[in-house]
Length: 120
View (cartoon, rainbow, N blue to C red):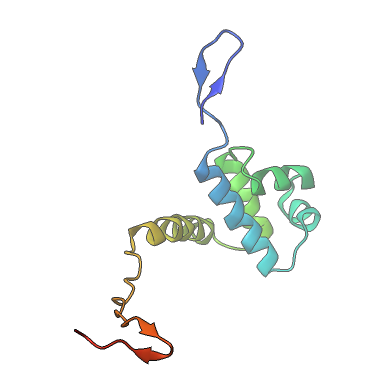
């Protein structure tokens, strides 16, 4: 959603869905390895608050920062990006699926006193 500037102009929101998705991917990979944000920050040479901001999608990490995260997670950068891409597909796929079709309702004859009415 665009942000309103003081001069009345609109600027794009820096917190895009892509940033949030990258942050979720980093968080998932960190959690799989049982690392805290502090430990990942130490291994990556980044401050733990910076790692948290990346995971929340609040900042756009540079290529150099992604390489530091690669080192801290002990993963090739391509695997980090692959998870980011899979999360994009996961987000789109449910919208592309058709909702399940309910079976047709059966019409039940109205009863009076527990006995079916006769057709007259």
